[in-house]
Length: 241
Length: 289
Image 1: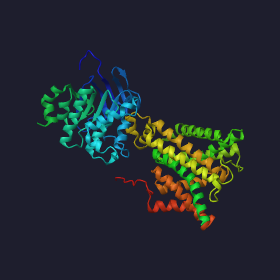
Image 2 (image 1 turned 30 degrees about the vertical axis):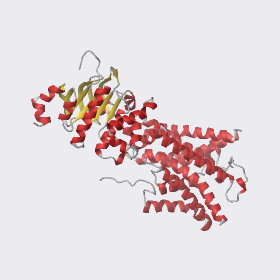
Image 3 (image 1 turned 90 degrees about the horizontal axis):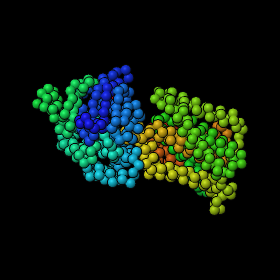
Image 4 (image 1 turned 60 degrees about the vertical axis):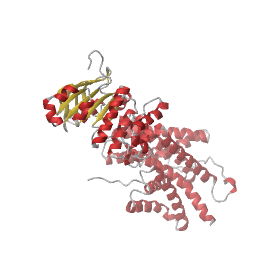
C-alpha cells in the first residue's frame, strides 16, 4: 500500500462480537485504491465476521474509513449506498425472484436507471449461464450459478469496494478458475477494490496484492501477497506443500 | 336459473371485498409471517373517517381519496410505532399486539362514533345499470373498483423498482439491506398499502352491511378463509380464494340456508388446513430438522 495516497478501505482496531462473545480482537487492515486484499484463515478465525463488521451487520467497535470518511456505526443500507457491495456468506440470493430481478435489485440504489439495463447485459457477457436463465427463479440455479449471480448482483451496484465471502465455496475447481479470472479482469478494467475472504489460500494469494492471516480473531501475519505466499509456515499450514 | 346467475354475480361482488381484505392479510403475512387480526378493524375505522368527512359535507369521491390516504398514513404509523418495537419478539407477543389493536380500534370507533348502526352511501346509482335484472349498480361498481385496485397493485409490485424492493424486503431482509434497501421503511409501506386496501374494501362493503364497529368481523373471517384457500403466502391465490369464498357463501346462503353462511368460512378454513395447509397456490414449506 502506498503511504502517499489514502487507502480505499482503512480499518483500525476493529472488534466485533456475537452477543457477549468477542470474535474479532482489534484488528487493523487496509485495501488500497483499486487493490485486492485477501484475508486468510481457518474455519472460525473470524473471516466472515470481519466482512460483516465492515458493513455493520453486527455489533462492532473500532474505526472503519472508506476513502478517508468514517463509516463505522452507519446503517448497513447507508454503507452500501456509499459504494460497498457485499457477496455474503451463503450468497444471499433472492430465491423466489427471477435472475434478472436479482440483478435489478443489485442496482436498486443507483439513480442512473438508463444504464442499468446495459450493466445487466455486461453481467450476462461475463456469465452467459445467467443469461440463459434470466427468467428463471434464482432458487432453481445450481450453487455455482448462484455464486455467479451473487457476484453479478454485487457488481450491479457499481461499487468502489467489493467484499467477497468465500467465492470459491462449493464450486468445481474449473468454475473457481473462471470466476477468479473474471474478478481479476473486473479489478483491472474497472479499478474496483476487493476485500477477499478465502479458505482457498493459493487462489486468493494469486489474485491479491496484500494479504492478512487471521487466527482466532487476531491478525498474525500481514504483508504483500507475494511475501506471504513464499513464507515457509504459511506454505505448510495453508497451501499444503 | 335467473336466481342462480344473480347469486353468482352478487357472490363475486362480495367476493371482491373478501379478495381485497385477503390480499391485505397476505401482504402483512409475507413480511411478518403472522395474520394481522386487526386488519378488519383498521378498515372499519377508516370507513368511519370517510363517514365523518361526508357528514362534514365533503363530496363522496373526495372523502374516498382522503380516506385512502389517511388509512395509508395510519398503517405506516401503526407499523412504526406499535409493530416495530415487537418485531423480534416471540410470536405470541406480536399476536397479542394484533388482538390489542383489534380491540382498541373497535372500542375507539364505538366511543367516538357510538355503536348505533349508520347508513353509508354508495357512490353508484340506485337503479341497476344497463337495465339488467341480475346485479345492482353498487355490486357492479364495487366489483369494478376492486378489480382496478387489484390491477394497480399487481402493476406496482410487478413493474416498479419500489414494488420489487418491497417484495425483496419481505422475502429476504438481510440480503435486501446488502443491496441498500431500507427494509424498515418497506415494511411500513406494506402496512400502509394493506391499510389503504382495507379502507377501500370497508367503504365498498359498508353500504350493504351498514356502518357499525363490528361490521368487519365476519368479513375478516371470510377473507381469512379466502386467503387460506388460495395460499396464505400467495397474493394471486388469496384474491382468487376471496372470490371463490364470496360465491360459495352466497350460493350456500340461498340453496341451503342463511344460517349456514358463516359456517361456510369455517368449513373452508378447517377443510383447507386438514387437506392442503398450503392452499391452492401456496408454497409447501419443508423444514429441516
